[in-house]
Length: 317
Image: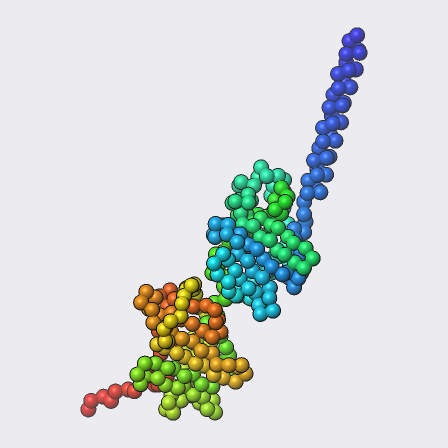
């Protein structure tokens, strides 16, 4: 009787051990199957559209669509153009994104990683042949590798991953961060004439002839002129004024002509009580900017003396 009882106990223990080993192998196998060593790999030339729902916009949709004219940007109120370089740099994140580690196997780990639909930023990448729906969670920093880390998961999967980089910071941007901010941009060496149109008799023309600049025919100071041209040749502008109705005549105008330009670059400053001026550039035709926020009018619309060497006063004998 005693021997039979021992045999039963040993049999039960053996069955339990075999079950535990099988379960362990199953869980290990499941973990292996779950892990995505290559989290995402995209040919950016096939991307047709980006739909982004950032926390900074309280989950409101930002739509970025590829068109023949460039990347079109749209939210529930504004339709404009995105900055192509900003979109291009963002898409580089998904060219070949590798998983550093498995951050969580299921939704129990989502809260700490900010990977719930409501706590993370959802990105939908729509390509010609496939779509990718991703949730981007919180940002972390690795002291060991001295690099940024971002927690991500696929929208229809529970497993979460750690990937290298600053994706969490890049994607959680407001609508205006994606906008085209070009105001003046060009090769100053190709510019041949800058016409400043001001009220009264203060207008003047800065001309280049045989690589020498003149102000209304008077020789300009080469250093002062070079400094000004350097400053405005790559001048962005922010402080967007949406729903602005153009109704006034510009108080200041700058027209830049040059070689290898399809048309002059024209920038205008319109008077505005609350914003001081509303600024507009022909290089960003559908955007208007607030001078009160941008603060570039003073350095852009200068007087003719800005290009003339100061006259030294004679010392009294």
